[in-house]
Image 1 (cartoon, rainbow, N blue to C red):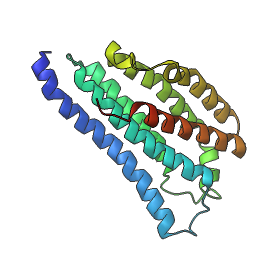
Image 2 (cartoon, rainbow, N blue to C red):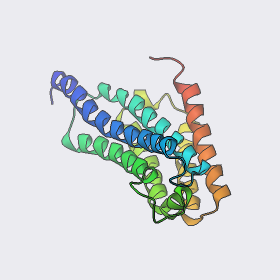
Image 3 (cartoon, rainbow, N blue to C red):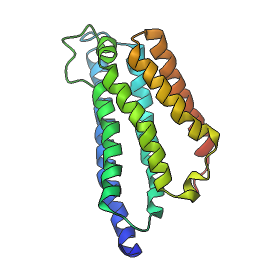
Image 4 (tube, rainbow, N blue to C red):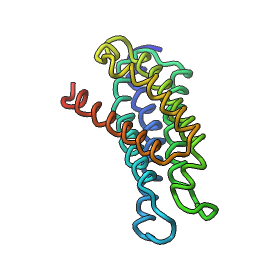
Length: 195
């Protein structure tokens, strides 16, 4: 594809990707609004609320990181499909935090823990997808990262396997705390300037 056409194509790809991410953000915000509007409808959970906060942050971080795709000179349908698939994976995670109904469960925590296999399977997949996404953006992009970025992949997958296997609330609270701490670390380390 001619580079000028690629530059014209990127905004369209970003709009579709942004729509998917926007749907995820909307879904999470509607869940928070529902909890505020009807505080006694379902039992609230710190674990669930922390994952909602973490996923809101994750969606914004994804949207921000994807701006680096403007450097790509040649676009193929497979690449577009990959980006949309990655965004869809994040959306599906938000859907698991924002169920249409939890009437079959004792509350949000019970729902989350019973659906943890799906959630942590998808979260584990995002570590792999993010690595591929980073490599797609080229050496100039991934050269800015150090061991802390590439070390998060095996650690993240290991934590996902532990969370997949266990319904222990303390373990899950620890994992979401580590996830949020890492997100804050990324923001402080890599987002203090726009370049």
